[in-house]
Image (cartoon, rainbow, N blue to C red):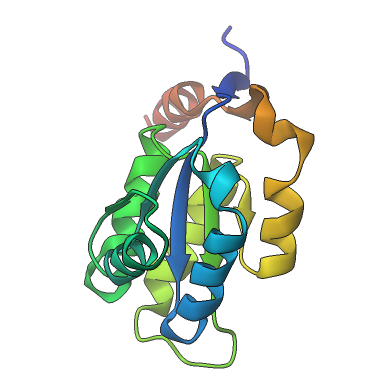
Length: 157
């Protein structure tokens, strides 16, 4: 019988998604400036407007997906599922309503399901990016979804 968990490895070079609500974009851009030397050693991507603004303001190359309200959060979530994003920095604004809040919750949920480090404020982002784990491979266990699906299919017969 297959194991309940599989081990995945987050490589030395992290695939980092950078996301910020409108009220937090300036804070994320400043955080990127403050951590530019570290971030240059990793692959960066982000939702549309945030990615463009970070690149314009810092010179860091950030691959842009759609804007959050236009499906960018969902694109980032899909990349997590594909194993192409393994670290998320999402400066969310808890004091402003977001029309795409269900998309944000789905992104946070999928990051949790796949055991992806996610920072949703500056303090957490600082702790994560300055961790010794940023400079090495990191093995983590994730639910063996193939086994879970097979077992569920058997129960539904």
